[in-house]
Image (tube, rainbow, N blue to C red; front, side, top):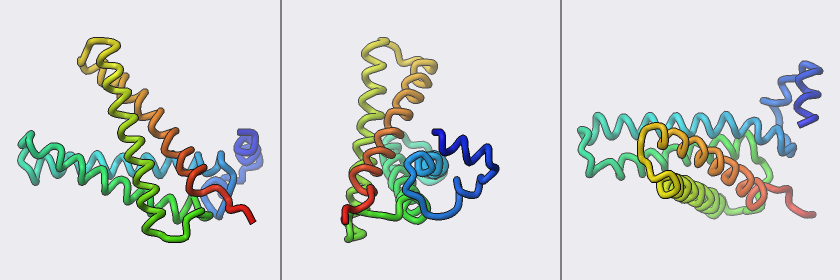
Length: 159
């Protein structure tokens, strides 16, 4: 955190956005943007598919959400590997993507689990409950996704 404060004090904002870095805080800062963009892609595509392609037929909602999740995951992977994480522990790109995706699926399961726990704990499914559960589960899932990917896939290789 101190390094980011120093960058801001020295007005060297370019370091936050440009160049390769192994600094976890700068990577986390960048991951906020990537995660936000992936969320927008996921949400927008889900809406477009459900509303316009499937004609709001509820039985196709899971297809819309599945396709949009995959699109958001692909955006996250492409931008993350080009901008944030340059040092992969995995040499095979297909294996790297599958591992990246598996971590994302665990994040999705965390989101579903936390949301279900909130439902059981609060015994409520109102809009306020949904918002609180979604905020908490998104934050936990985001932290899981970043740190699992950083540690398991993108920590500098030992020489």
